[in-house]
Image 1 (cartoon, protein in one colour):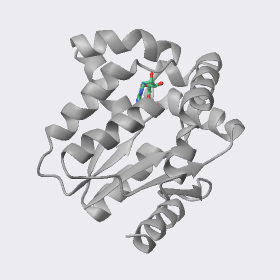
Image 2 (cartoon, rainbow, N blue to C red):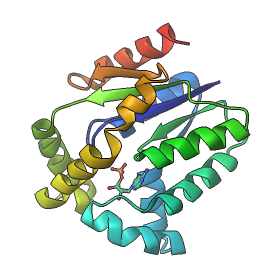
Image 3 (cartoon, helix red, strand yellow):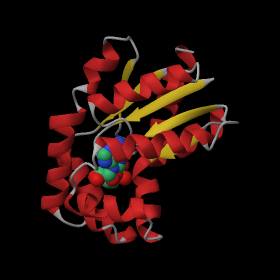
Length: 191
Ligand code: AMP
């Protein structure tokens, strides 16, 4: 069983790459951002809760996010393994994820970070926002706030996973297929 975290700043390609990794290794892809967006579109209680944070580019509170993630995993008890995309984003989320997986006799296999610099990411996000209509991708102030949230709260996870020898970084530039191959190489050489 492979339980993989795809790590990286907004726009680094986690969602795109997760689809390729999911198909190759037959894993269940959980994107917390996608689950929140789905709930917002259905106007569920969770969606209403998450909306104001997401609109500003702030992180949704840990207790809400962790509960949702656990429900997603519990709903896929037959999965061959998971790709966590956009989760964890805080130390508390990472600790809770370890604890939760342990209670199911599972663990994180590795974290793969897609490294792309912020100036490239801003242009990628603006262009993605034009296609998708995502409000948080269309406003440079919101994009900057998402980077700030990452730099303040998420980047510390690099050391969290490094200290467990589970952190790998690849360059997130180039053709989509080339980037996938870099990810496959990391997975295949470490499992
Ligand atoms: P993403 O699609 O991963 O870029 O996430 C979009 C937005 O959803 C983020 O800016 C946050 O507001 C919220 N979000 C997604 N995942 C998390 C998480 N693990 N913790 C807190 N907020 C999250």
